[in-house]
Each structure stands twice: as C-alpha cells, then as structure tokens.
Amino acid sequence: MTVTRLLKIVFTTSLLFSVFAASALAADKNDKTIVAGFAPGPYSDMFKKAIKPGLEKKGYRVEIKEFSDYVQPNLALNNGSINVNLFQHRLYLDKFSRDKGLKLSPVITVPTAAVGLYSRKVKSLNQLKAGDEVTIPNDPTNLARALRLLQKNGLIKLRADVDATKASEKDIAENPKGIKIRPVEAAQLPRTLDSVALSAVNGNYAIAAGISLSSAIVLERLDENMTNLIAVRSEDLDKSFVKDIRAVVASAEFRKVIEDPRNPFKYFQQPEWFQHKK
Image (tube, rainbow, N blue to C red; front, side, top):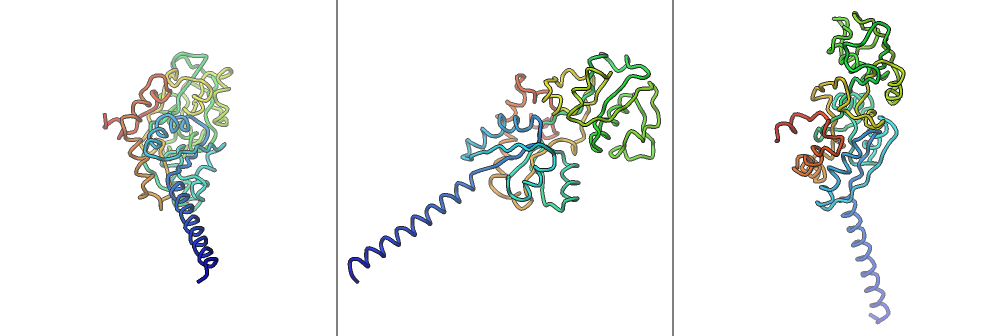
C-alpha cells in the first residue's frame, strides 16, 4: 500500500468519524431542546417564569412559540413542530383530539385563570336592574361556562333538560332580573366594559387587557377537567423530557413563582394536586 493511498484511507476515516460525531452531537442537542407552544394569554409567561428556568437547570434549551388562536397549538404539537403546549383544559383537548383524529395526552394540570364577572358600572350583582346588558363569550365552550356562572349566581336559570356544558342563550328558562345577554367574541369582552353593566371575561383575556383577576365581582370555580394543562404527543409520554417537565411543575421553585404576589398567577385557581402538595 502506497503512502498516498494510506493517507487517503486515514483522511476518509477521519472525515466519516467527524460526520458521525457531528450527527451524534446534533441528535443529542435535539434531544435536549424543547419547543413549547401557546395560544394568546398568560400561560407563555407562566412557562417562561415558572417552568423554563427549571428545565434549563436540567440542561434543556427551551424555545417559546406563540400562536394567534386555539387551533394551531394542537396541530403543531401533532405534526412535531413543537414538543409541548400549554393553553387548554382537558375537555377541549379531548374533543379537539377526537374531532381531528390526533393522539395527544395531558401531562399535568397547572393553576388556571378562571372566567370572572367584571363591571365598571356596578359593585355587586344585586345592583343589576331590568334592561342592563351583560356580555358573554360567543364560542360554544365559553358561552356555556358563562351561562353556568350566571346561573350559579342567581341571574338566570337554564332549562332543566339541557346539558349545561352545551347550553346557549336560547336555553335560558328564567331571567328574573330582566337582563339582556349579548354574546361577543371572547377577546373583545374587556372592551365592552365601558358600555355594559356586566361582562363574563375569560381570565387570559382579562389579564391581557390589564384587568386584575382580584377585581372580579365573582370568579367561577373550575371543575378539575376545566383546569389548563400541559399536553404532549401520546407517543412521547414516557420520554425523559416529559418526566422532567412534570418534575419541574411539581417543584418548590414552581410554587414559589406561582404564589409570588408580584405575578398574576397568585389569583389563578389551583388544581387539586397543587393544593394537596402544600
């Protein structure tokens, strides 16, 4: 074997080794990168402040991707554009996955901003009078939530034979105060407060509009299946990054950020596990 041929073999072997090493390094880097997706609202801030630091301590590189609606975060999760999302509750996740044929699963629930009844006209629900206008979300899920909240506080009564989780304004059987209920796009509800007596505003939109959750006349009490959660692809449930996310959310550091009065999360409804872990 000539010296030239020997050098070519050595060079080729070194090149192949470098390629394999680079590929392995890239794969390792990809394994330690988490891309998290969010819809409009406070949950990207929750992830950045309360979850991202803990993941970074575990060696992950965390990227944040924000979407403009409640549809794309699940589609992006399903197609692998992101690894995890945080914006929805269990009922929405299950229905969306079923309707779209997706295989997505919950990881852990987090403190959640509830729907609240807000007003710049009255200080209590007792001050409402006949003809006062009340705005509520117009999308089916949140519309039903708002109606249940109005019913719980004695402002309306829904038909006994209706599924309260699917109720619309057409299902109102009694309206003792004679209030006028007007469905509006959820994101626009804070803007109606200057012109109506009362508005049922989702917590995320209240926060986005600079409205403190503590200023609500009434806040809804969420069922556990209405508490927001972190979701991943079902095939990823047993992967290390999912276990690490769960561990970070269950940590004392996460709780410290949530309970810090300087953050809006302090007024979020706590999931059952969070309350019991004190």
